[in-house]
Length: 73
Image 1 (cartoon, one colour):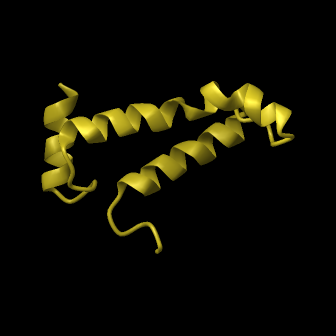
Image 2 (image 1 turned 180 degrees about the vertical axis):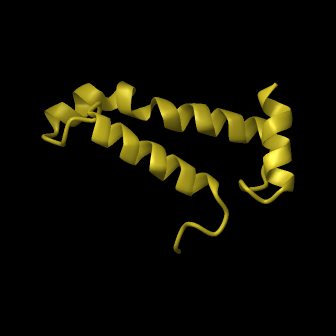
């Protein structure tokens, strides 16, 4: 169900063109980062990764990464 949706989004130019399964795996991986690295970030003295603000900023970053033309070189 997700694969046809991603393919439609790619055809429409909403997200980058790439192999659809690579996009799906990349998306799943990016979404998991804050919960996976919470302990490491705490040990490194970084801001807590699971606060509402941090999660919202991470979600925005993922969306910017996926949208063509939104990243500067």
